[in-house]
Length: 466
Image 1 (cartoon, helix red, strand yellow):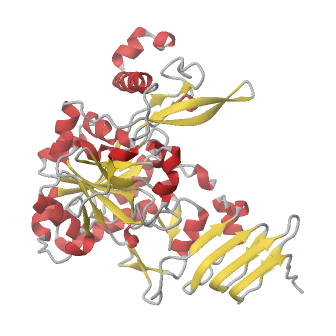
Image 2: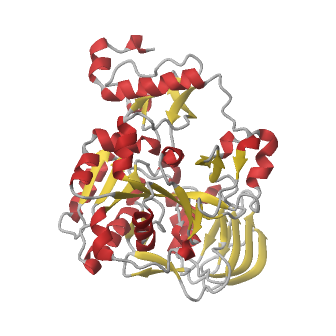
Image 3: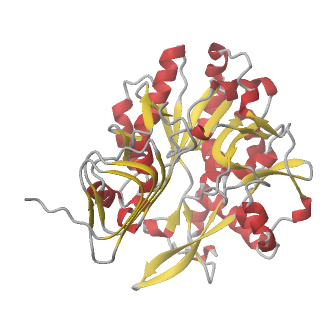
């Protein structure tokens, strides 16, 4: 398949060699059934999935354990899904702070409180690296040392022919892709950062998605991991009906594995989505022993399941389907010794994927503790977070800000659905279940100071200035 790339380009590029190995595995396994045998699956035992409450009673020694920790944020994503340009991590999410601002402030607070020197690593992609390098300059004098490295740059392949879209290593960016967060292991090693961390005495890497505002350093988990000599800990949390597709831990052939919905036989999809049978899902908050990671890399044992992600490129005015071969960092759990899950409070999983999520974290439902940590306000003494569904008119950040320039009060909200051309005024309060559906071609303006409780608003409603 590399007949379009010169021999020198292929020979000199480690990334091309890594991609070729991945591509070869994909071809070899393509005819092999990827679904798991349902009869082989067992629920994890108490030893394999530990409740967080059992960790809270242990003795914590911050001065002993923090010098052994580094934090890594996955920073390869763009804000395109929310209509933004550049790294998603720089989108403002709370009180003028971006995702990255809050990550830095959390490490600063930790280092100041305990006199530690925990570093923050950013795994960028070729899409986010240049902008991120400029942005992190503002943190040069902070009490948080930031280091960054790039994940790999792999060529997309045409779905039908499996030939590479790229004909040269200098081809346009739409010919390439960052191969998922499972690339973390190789990218960390090839960048030299892995050896540098180990040489400085760091033993544990805490990995999380850059847009998960609940993924903060937890001393209980760190102490437990070091005391239990675990090589890999995955944070799990209780499933709700909104999380039925999330990956979950299972036991297979005596090993803990991550089971994703794509691996489940069709006849057992409903079983997989049953929140009573599979109670927990993967938050992608991961704690990984660095020496164990290096050994597995050198032994070439980290061969996670390949995820073929279908995308499209525009050629001659037409959309052509292409494949991105990716892997997931969570799937590596089965290669580590004494690996298991910890069931953590839902507060440690607070991702912002959409403007619906953004409304939640910007609201008075959360307080910003120590100017760094989002915490649920004590006034919300019942239930979990409300379910918020904003329609396509709110998909892009610009439209969201135009339609909801003032975030409503939602402490007593259970469910909110807004569909159509809707605008909220100042000091609006939403309680219980609120559904606002605007008719096609019409407009609904919710007046300033409105209190909506257990109501359905439909049709059109426009407030005229006079």
